[in-house]
Image 1 (cartoon, one colour):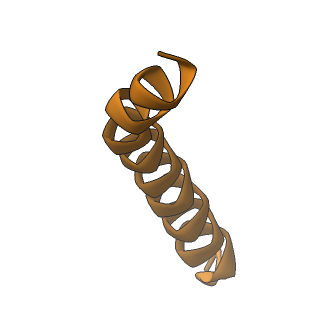
Image 2 (cartoon, rainbow, N blue to C red):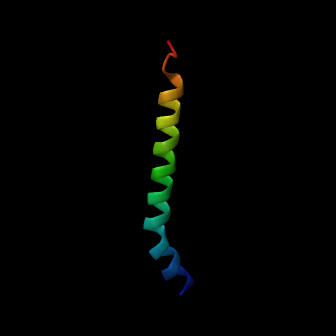
Length: 36
């Protein structure tokens, strides 16, 4: 049962990780832009 639950949660966790990674990459891209 636990394994089934983990497998069902994997797609959601991967989606969250991708979203967080995208936010971090976007933040780095924005912070790397010159202020001028």
